[in-house]
Length: 485
View 1: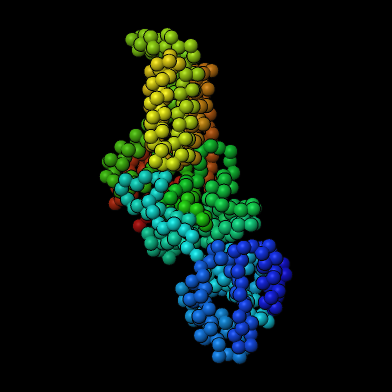
View 2: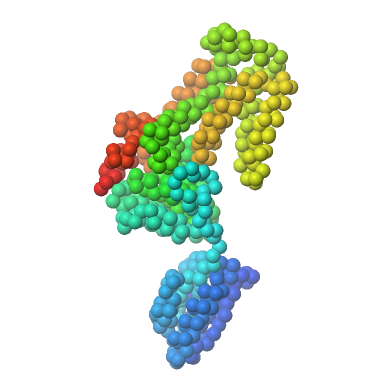
């Protein structure tokens, strides 16, 4: 790429040509002493107040008496006058095209082949607020925002250790999005960090608009189950860092990624650490039970009604037969339709405005369920089975994990339709093999179940009291095994 011209008019024209005289591009040239100085900004991302109050007043007051001005003199003057903004000297057009849309003012001096970038960003972000997707019953209420530095600050204020490192990467040929990898240097092993950095450096795409883009590139195995945890909660991110995990923050998105994410992580909740260990342990057992219920209940119902009737007690079988005697659809079609209708209602509940979503979901479920039973399309027990399945799935908040459960629920249903309980068993074995095959940052996805680690397995099911929980998870293979060191 061409070097920066010494003639400021050429530089201004070069930028205007590159941006095709965009309506938000603004430049001005002034003369101080016998030197011309020009600045150029993108008004859509820059603050006029910062430019006039700090920049123009500062250089006019300190440099108007000088006959000749060099880029070094100007840089030193700005450093001494503008103490609340980033100032950097740049030498390439590539840097200009990165800093200009980032809210920086680019300053040229006649006769100089370098320029100065001064941070004059406009405030385009919302303030810190409650998490929208992860309900907080007890614990900190703040959540990440679209502002990158605020997100880093929300972590910094919780972990004040100088060993907490934030390493920046610029990803995206056009967007030049700032992607930051965070980890505790004395806890995470270098090979893990290099593995993630290598994957980040290999990303070659036009633009990164959300952390979901990064998540997709980090997943090199075909699976519906998420191997990277997505969260809006700074407290969960801080807990993960202290355990020995890595974190990825992406500019302009409130969703932060935690690596690695193994299966057991989705049965835990940050609030487990704020409650009584006995209550938290019981809640975790309920989540494990709900996982099995939401996956298997529809398939087991279809198996028992269609293939394995002999396993149902006679009084129960007679009651079910009485309910289904006027139905003209099979148990598989019946459950398949109800589960699908529920998923449609769930999606509509997510997509439409919050004020309408809950009411439409509840009314839709009640009206459709009652109408379907009255019309003889489905049985009451099928509606109950679907409701139990749906309610059990609501215990999990990670949307990727919920969608994975939905996919495998359908696979279990298909297995039940073709083979009864044997078909369900076959699909279950396939699921276990699939999960055992998955790895995230070279860590088995089923850790600590496979390979078996009894201390970690105990920690997975039961919430250990803080005074006794002194070791980090062994499957993370950290440098520092103890939490208190």
